[in-house]
Length: 344
Image (cartoon, rainbow, N blue to C red; front, side, top):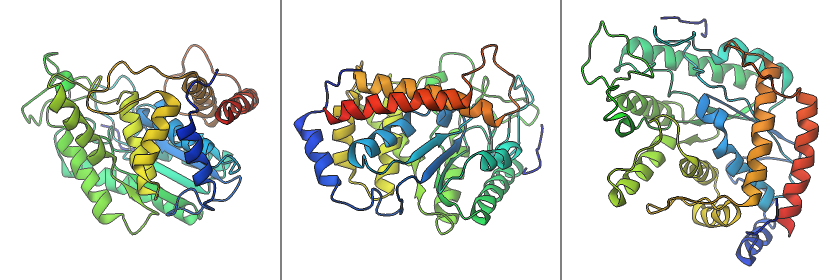
């Protein structure tokens, strides 16, 4: 086990969405609990769930729709497999990267006014609850927060989403027993690994609430969403048990928006209208709008280029992304098209 040293034609801009935009523009602040001004930069840090970035894109869509003059720069530097703890399971194909290895480079290349932090899914390395691993997680989060606070950044700290063991049932990969000699991993996880994530979430909500702008309970929101889905369809499973589907990312985005003071019900209706993504218990086979398709392309372009520009310890992919300056220029063109669609 490695321990690092801290280690598109818009078909959805309906009159309802237009009215919501007009109403929200009367507000001087998009988030009552978080003061932002034009041209502020918002940075997201996390693992593969954050790298996927759909929840970030939903938040950005809400901002574009409701505060078009607040030209915020949103940078997603989530990195797959990453931890805050520095731990890595023995059977992982490569040592897991740790945010502390690249945080100085991140802050040298960005200038965030607000940093959203979401770690935990990988930090317990899919083992049963263990005090040493929990201590590494606490120390890793504390060290990260201390660095960001010293730099004067506002921080939004999020709990990890849940682990859905139902997704792995029947695949013969879950390990039900607690065996001190077994090498658990993301491929052969402890069956009740979500107990670890609940512990992380409780610690964040109870111990860190006074150190950040807000804490955001993604674990609770996602657990409740999964429960509601299974009341309608007992066989529902969350993909591979780790990575939420797009509707799960919408749940995450709505929890973030509500935690920052936005009316959740109105935001859900508006984002569903704009993107075509639904989260109701019966929602299935949702069809994304052309607007959401364009937003998705822009998100993927920028994320991969930012990650490569900062640098990381993961094995390099065969196809390198577009250089960051070129990606930014292309993304600016896409943003113009997105704003045009939102104004139609």
